[in-house]
Image (cartoon, rainbow, N blue to C red; front, side):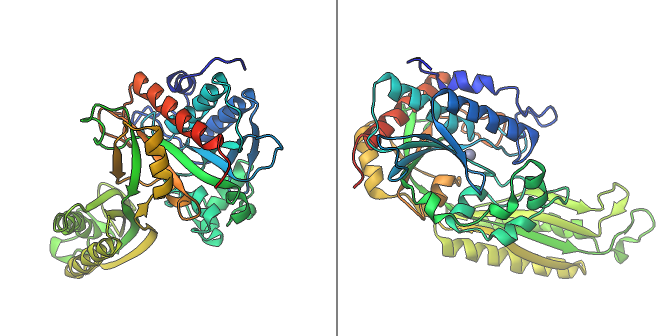
Length: 411
Ligand SMILES: [Zn+2]
């Protein structure tokens, strides 16, 4: 590799055909799928072309090391993001952070930077949780925030377990679990991510610094009634869980509107057996609730579940709700943030409602985030858009931050 700098947009162009979704538009790149494996292999080739030394740990996290003199892998500066996507996701959510990290390495090399501490570019698996329901799965496992026994049994929409799916692509599920020694090699972690809201769209700045991540959780709701014939079953005789599900969606909206700055979403629903002329016997639906005050989040979910239980009883259906995950509000390390503010004095400081691996890692070490402007303000959608010039500015900003960190001895 010479001193040429690959821009994020040039790197994104190289993966633009991988995992395209002709039905939904955008990209579908779930963990352990062919597209996601292809992307990971692509990343390894890019890392090796930059003389980074690649290792994959037991949790499937890829580490690409730029070693410091002496070669000791400790007190490292980590950066990176994820390559998996939601169904029908945009091109930037995840990959922009990975591409910017590679691009930042090029910038540092072109500047002649000699790291005093190792720099490691990381790719985290199943950040979206779109296949097994648990977001930031790789970083959660490594940080001890996800139980490996439970994770091995998690099922995807086709009933395939995590253990089966990972084994099918050659990842040993018996190796997952807490990795304090591995994560302990990091002194700081800085993740760059496309902004997923409109915070920057109205400001005349391409890059922002993260301050906090809204606490959020996911719950699985199951409503059971009685499956029957759509033509022969009298309306009065029905126990139709779809009717309850419809009411629950309205209940969620009302419960969330009652609380300032709260968010609540039902984005996924499944009727069993799912026939047009069949009254469903069971409905499964997933609830996502977010608020800065974790107590408030729990209170909202309690209000939803109380009202939903009443609605289920009216229809003679059963109702249950189980928490699949909960991430408290994250306040990024202030010392690290202030240091980044000195490197990027023009960058505004923003809060976000989207979860990230940097938020999970912040439970173990000082972490920070940079956001790059997304003019549509839309994410988890093919409409997500980051202008090439903004992506370039993001990579330069990340390089500036990393340069500041790797040139100084650890505190
Ligand atoms: Zn993301």
